Structure formats: C-alpha cells, structure tokens
Amino acid sequence: MHPEPHDEIRVASFRNLDTTTLYGILKLRADVFVVEQDCVYPDLDGRDTEPGTRHVWAERDGAVRAYLRILDDGGVERIGRVVTAPDARGNGLAGRLLAEALTIIGSRPSVLHAQAHLAAFYSRYGFVQTGPEYVEDGIPHVPMARG
Image (cartoon, rainbow, N blue to C red):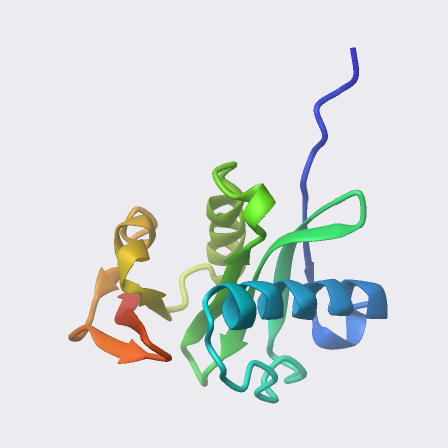
C-alpha cells in the first residue's frame, strides 16, 4: 500500500517565495478568480510584496493546491485571495489554511470580504458579518470580522 498523498501547509513572506511557488500561486489565483469566476480585476494589486504580507498555501508534490494571504492593514489583519484548485476542493484545505492564518494572527483583530455563499464557512471560524451584502465583480460579498 502507498501512503495517502499529503498536502503540506507553508507560510512565507514575499521575499522568501521562490519563483516556482510564486508562479503556482499566481496561476491558481488567475485560473479560479479570472477564468473560472470570470472576474476581470487587478489581482496583482501591489500588496503581495509588502513586508507585512504573509502568504499561506497548501502544496502537494510541488503543486500549489490552495492559498490565502494575510495583509497588515495597520493593526488589523486582512485575510484575502482565499482560493482552492478545483481538483482539490472538498478536502478541507481552505479550512486548514484559515486555521493556520488564525494561528499566525493570534489575538489581533482580523477582517475579510467573503463571497456571500461562503459566509457560513467563515462563521465557523468566529467571523461575523459587519455590514450589508454588496456586489463586487458580479459576485455578492459580505464584510466580516473576527476579534
């Protein structure tokens, strides 16, 4: 019997990302947000390279299968770009990444803008809706906060 393949959770600042991993992260974000969800938006917003940004991803056999980033918004941590590859969905990867992000954030307050259909998922991690639903890039979102 072969052991079950395992997804490893990794964390790095921008300067510690190797180019192959960075390419994998950006390709996953483009494949899901731009192609699958049909949103034309400035994914490369300049925030990936900020010194306070932490990149958190799940990797298996060198492939990036899920990702999120944590931005330092001056005393508040902003979780964003939460994404899972289509063939990796349903395996709890987003939950593992979110749990890792919350461990990194610790007791500091955190915010995110959830796609509305995922609000219940984030509420399981202590996030509560803080404002009305709005539409961004054709997709309903809700602002949420924790702590």
